[in-house]
Amino acid sequence: MADFKTHIGTSCTLGAGYAALGAYYGLPIEAALVAGGLCGLGGMLPDIDSDSGVPVRETMGFAAAVTPMLLVDRFQHLGLNYEQMVLAGGLSYLFVRFGIARLLMRYTVHRGMFHSIPALLIFSGVAFLLCGYGNLHLRYFKAGGVFLGAFSHLALDEIYSVQWTGGRWRFKSSFGTALKLWGDSAWDNFSVYSKLLVVAVLILSEPMIMEQYGQLSPVVVNTEAIRERLRLSPGAPGSLSLSRRASVLTTTGESWPYCSMIIGSLRISTATTRSFE
Image 1 (cartoon, helix red, strand yellow):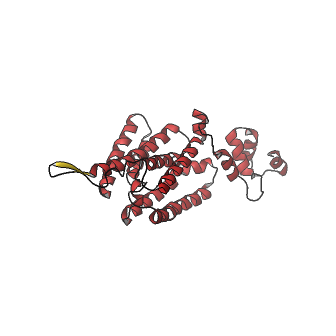
Image 2 (tube, rainbow, N blue to C red):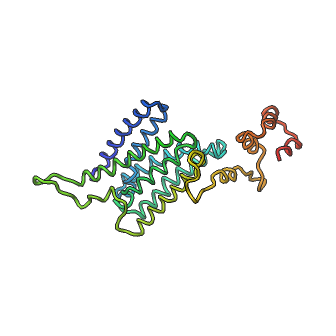
Image 3 (cartoon, one colour):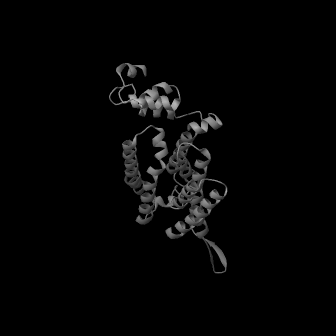
């Protein structure tokens, strides 16, 4: 199979071409560069089940650093303030860097179901969920970068499992273990397809997806309800704080007079506060 440096070099080269292609077709240069970087990262992802410490450490360290940055747009959509976003970003880094990494090192085997087509789709789907909240085309393009990078890894593993020796082609025992739909373990197959199902439901529950294509899934996660739940004031169970209520009203465009009152004066009377209710 190809070594770690070969995978990184190939995915980064593809990422540079992918970014150039996006910029050529009119995507914002910064978005195209992010997509190219994700392509480079995607080339490392199938090796997160590696027996060696280097691929796991490098991959999880880079993924942990990138994840909070990709989540900034979603944090803003949830209405988090600056301090809350800092805390959420730090927690997401620790969760990926130490929580997920430890689970992977303990419960996975190399060349298992992380080297498979369903895992490839999971990587791409998670990238779609992480990459912002708005423009669908940009999210598709960034997720496509992860797909391209991860696919290059699997394809290289299959290519390197074929050798020309003794005047004929010989297949290693690893041939066919990368680009596979299922493995030998029934539990591993159930686990990876369950994860793929969860990712698919989350994607189909995205408001932008439902707005564009309608409800495609019989099961939908109400992300808007979760967002409003996070906006609840801790001091008054079941009610919104004044500043957050103004944020909701501004977002929905229902009460511009109230917003102008808040902006125009820092002293809001009790009667004005009650008018929000």
